[in-house]
Length: 305
Ligand code: BEZ
Image (cartoon, rainbow, N blue to C red; front, side):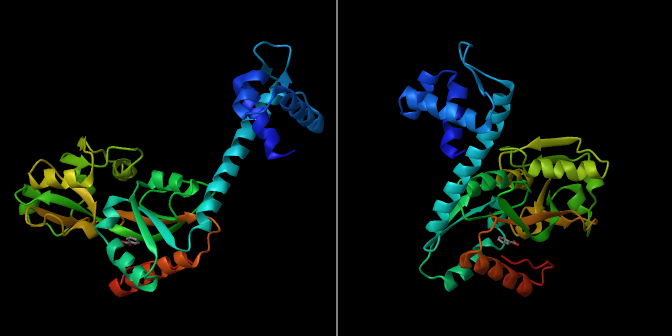
């Protein structure tokens, strides 16, 4: 059985007609019918009820169809990922979530550039879920994100857990109390500005889960499109928000940042790469990141590509 057989079968199954499927595949009908018959003979099972109009799959055909589309999708992914790998030496395409751009990413990129002065570096803002898709479509080579999405073809490297802090307007009573730390419970009845609105799941869902996992509920929260809008509204005195610690230099004239008492309130920074991609570029990028961590004294567990 070859991939060609699967493609032919899927076309017939979806078009419910040999004639339409042949047109879709740009071949004539007799060879298409022969190939499907060959497939059925090889596996010894009838997949298509030819008496039925429009054509209908047998029960075994339905089963075969569900698996065939998965195998074809995997083979398309493999092709796209390999094409990308082939052009990888002279360029690297990096996906990132916005909050990471305000942290170490710029420093890491410029240090990486010193090692590879002639490389083309493409940066694309993508949320964690979009990064998974872009990796399997061969559109990026590495992603830096904050949420975990399981995909068998992607390897996740947990770089570190970054502490979260609460952004509070300077004139807010919680800021004026001069608190050194704050609890999630203190925020349950505050107007929380959570971001980004889409695509979901996003950091909004991560923060709401932090509440839920502590048997708390964010009673008053509004969803805003992105991090900058949340911080702008905090500066305007319209509410509070939660951000990763590396952002605490933003809008510092109008906003106070208070760490959580519970040191476990963190957001992971995750590097995603295609499984089995052991390119020198990725190894260097990871190594440069760890060098910064050593310099900054961050806690991390070293992994290798
Ligand atoms: C970090 O802040 O830990 C980080 C940011 C971007 C890429 C890698 C690590």
